[in-house]
Length: 207
Image 1 (cartoon, rainbow, N blue to C red):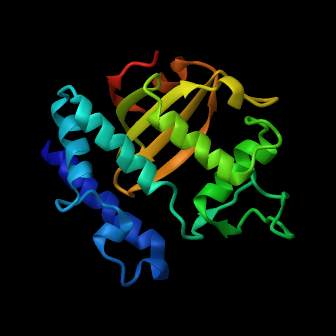
Image 2: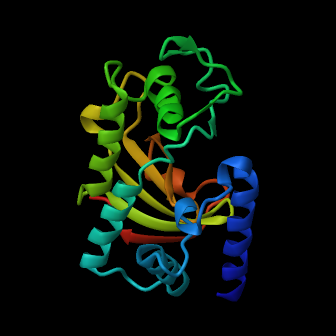
């Protein structure tokens, strides 16, 4: 487990560097670094490293924690190509423009991607994410992905599926940053076994 602790420290330091001036004067709790004073982050790391089962009360606490954290509210997320060109709040979004993370993912997956029904608002998109997190039929898992421990939630899209949507909604929470990192729709559970993901552990299987 020692190398994981060193890796997490490196991730936290890199986060502070990437935030630049926006990170100055911020405490570790502001960044959500999973430090010792954060009991839920400490719980997540302990389960990830020991691979022990999670108790029902701990799972409720974990879901509440992620719902409360939400997306990073600061305008530090780059729009990128998938959100650029959209008319949003009276202007056309540019690829290098930085917005709050919830807005970027809403523009990518709802407005441009049509994964949710076309009439879905930003607040409804955020609400649907909380629904997936709190739904007892949703699967919950831990994994090591792109240098950090992630908590994932995956549930059936049902009525939230748009014209280009898929059968499942995947929500991921980056423990080292302390925020939801993404929420989008995927075709099947096989998606979770692709790419750079490792140390996968189901905390609750999807129904």
